[in-house]
Amino acid sequence: MNDNNICQSTLSGNGHKTLTTYLVGFNASLFLTIIAFYLVFRHLLSDTHLYIAVVLLALAQLYVQVIFFLRVNASKESRMNLLSFLFTILIITVLVGGSLWIMYNLNYNMMH
Amino acid sequence: MNTKTLGHDGHNSDSTDIFGFWMYIMTDCVLFATLFAAFAVLHNNTYGGPGIKQLVSLPYVFGETMFLLISNLTYGLGLLSVHKRNQKQLLGWLYVSIIFGVGFLTMELNEFIGIVREGHSWQSSAALSSFFTLVGTHGLHVFLGLVWMVVLSFQVTKLKINSTMVRRLTYLGLFWNFLDIVWIFVFTIVYLMGAI
Image 1 (cartoon, chains in turn green, orange):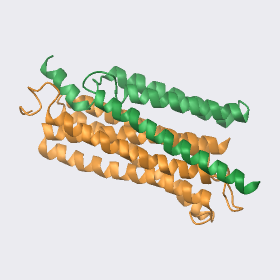
Image 2 (tube, each protein chain N blue to C red; image 1 turned 90 degrees about the vertical axis):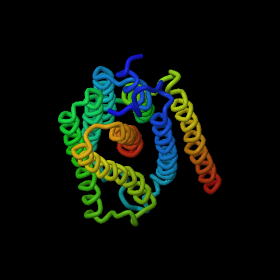
Image 3 (cartoon, each protein chain N blue to C red; image 1 turned 180 degrees about the vertical axis):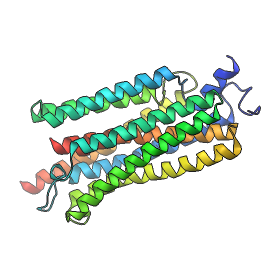
Image 4 (cartoon, rainbow over the protein chains, first blue to last red; image 1 turned 120 degrees about the horizontal axis):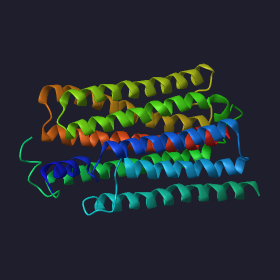
């Protein structure tokens, strides 16, 4: 590994960043954002399908930004970052999913 | 460039420091998750007032989104000029990122002021309390990120690109990208789902 490479991987905290990865990430994010806004603005699908579509588009954009901007990957240098990131996703799922589950049931039991 | 950053194999103190900052960002994710959970539970409790749908305009939010996304890209391009040790280019990209970040924040504040002027403050209903808390916390993070960016651009002018500056710029890069990722969920859950 030459000096420049060492420098780059130290810099980013994750994988290497290049102009290409930034531009691919930017264009993909732009594309996904435009689709999401356009679908909702024109109301092109039924309500349920719109909810599903915007959630899937948001998750796709999360993936794009994590891969192309943050450059989190499974390489040895960024493994701890990846593990802590996955652990955080688990915590968030429990936190948000659990809160909604509890509150939904509470709401239901108050009504009936 | 001194020998602190060079001549290591990636397991130096710099990458440990950056991992520490990464852990802070992960905990900040949990903070936002709690605010999102609160918003998801409360967003229908409008206390007879208008819902989010009546208060926001989608094209406007799309504009905000573009400002933040472009700011994110230009900051990334700035980091690329750090690799090339091109200080002038780095400063240029930092200024562009600051301008787009300020544009985002101005639009957001303008939106808030508009909503409050119509008589719907954060005290009006649980839905608006959670709305202002969630979006406002994100806006506060963006504001602090901008202050940080201004400070770094002064430091780059004074101290030039050295290993300490490279580390600081990397922290802010992670932070700035993190804010854009949080914004994806803000516009999806608050604005798009609110408008359906």
